[in-house]
Image (cartoon, rainbow, N blue to C red; front, side, top):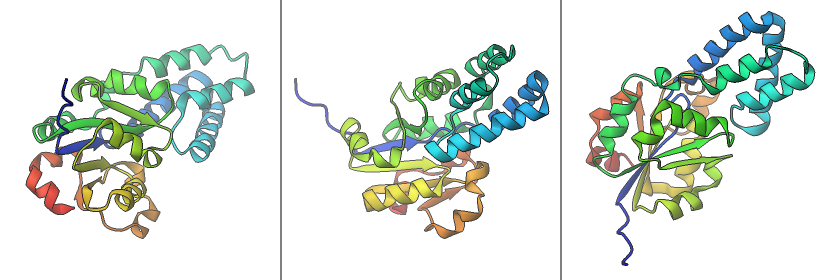
Length: 226
């Protein structure tokens, strides 16, 4: 059988604070923890959470819960917190217009989820949010996605890539690797997009204030922006 012709353009979408409002997920978890374990232990959980995020480079909710468990092995609320996370209704936290944005650019090329995260909770998030189904289950989750571009190209070869992400650090790193083969789209949403260090990175090719704004761009505009 002849090999299928590679699509000319592949669209790569980040998940957290790009398609999914992860800041609201974290706020919801904080409220749940306050009711379940109180303010002191809630603060302790999030201290562990931030320590892991600094160490790993991505949010690890379940890893932080495991660390919390080591500190409080007999806490009867641990199972309730675990259940809350695993069964969280992520579809309710998609940004307005996120699915419209993905479906809009799917007319121009293949759409792929390209995310960082752990091997259990992040795939669960993609599945329960409906994002996996929306991109035809083309989902890539790495520890550090900017270090895995060769694998991305191998799995989804293309003449041109469009990367939509809320982190200028990631967009800059991938742009340095792929150059004019990449259009960087900065979704200026969430706490990373407004962090103080954003100013030290080069300007992205395209900046949108909301993910839904992507529907205002056609393929020609996205290619030209690179």
